[in-house]
Amino acid sequence: MTVQAHWYESIASRDEVDFTDLIDANTPTVVVKEPQLQRRDQHARAQLRSVPLFQLYGFETVLHTKVWDNQFKLVDYDPVLTDEVNDVSDLSFPLVHVVTQQGINEYGEEDLVRQLVRRSIDEGGRYVLVADTAAPKTPSYTKKPGKSIVDEFGEICVRDYEHLSSEVLESHLDSHIPVVDTRNLFFHAASTMHHQHGVPAESIDAVFDYTQAPAESPVWESARYFIEHDLENVLSDYSERIREALRSWTERGDTQRVANHILETLDICDYDLGQFEDYRQRDPQHR
Image 1 (cartoon, rainbow, N blue to C red):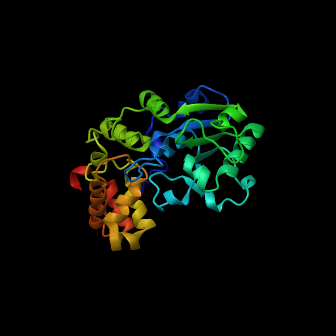
Image 2 (cartoon, one colour; image 1 turned 45 degrees about the vertical axis):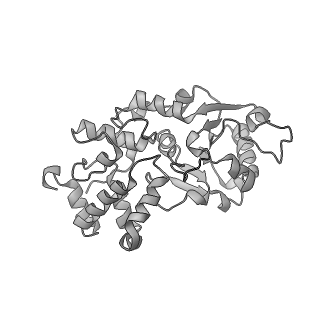
Image 3 (cartoon, helix red, strand yellow; image 1 turned 90 degrees about the vertical axis):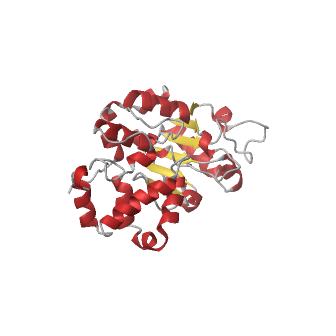
C-alpha cells in the first residue's frame, strides 16, 4: 500500500526551496498581503489557499479563525484556532497566521498579532502574517491614524502573495491550470504531476478525475479523508459537505464536479479503505 505523505513530494526541485530566497529578506517577521482575503460582495472563498505555499517552505502550523475551520484539510497541516489560544507562549515558530483587518479589529486578535510580532523580532523566529492588507493596524494600541504595525515595529518585510505564488510556479512547477483559475499551489503541483504522466491536467476538474489520476497524485488524499474521518457526513449530505469544504481552498470553479468525482470513487470502493487503496493502485486503463 502506497500513501502520498505530503502533496509537495511530487515537486522534483523541492529540496532547492528556501524561504529567505523567496522573500529576498532575512527579516524573521513577514507580512504577506493576500488579496483573496479582502472583503467582497460575494461569499468569501479561498481564505486558506496560501497554506500550501508556506507548507512547501516548512510551515506546518497555521493560526486562523474557527470560521474557516470546516474540518476538511486539502493539505495535512496543523491548524490552531485563534479563539483557543490562551497563552501566546504556547505557540512556536515557524508560524503562519491568516487574518483580516476586520478580524484584528472585531475578534480580539490585536493582542495576539502584537505579541507574536514582538516575539518574532526578539527571538528571531519566523512569523508570517497573511492579511488582506500590506499595513495591518492595531488601533487600540496605535492611536496615530493610518499607522500600521509595519510602521511601528519597523523590522518587518512586506510581500504580496500573488507575486510569491508566481515565483514558485515559474521556478518549481510546470502546471497546465491557468493561474487565473487558482493560485493554490496544491492544484498546480497535481497538474504538474498529471501532465508528466500524460493524463488530463488543464483544470481542477481534470486533475480530480480519479479514473485517470496517477496513484502518486495528491488528489487521492481528498477522497481518502472522507473515508477515514467523515464517513457519516459523506453518507448523509455529501455534495453540500464537499462543496463547502473546497470553498476555503478554491477561488472559483465548479466544486460540484470535484464533489462528484470523489463521490463516484467512494461509491466504486464501497466506502472501504482497503478497496479504495486497491482501486488507487490499479492501472488507470482498468479503473
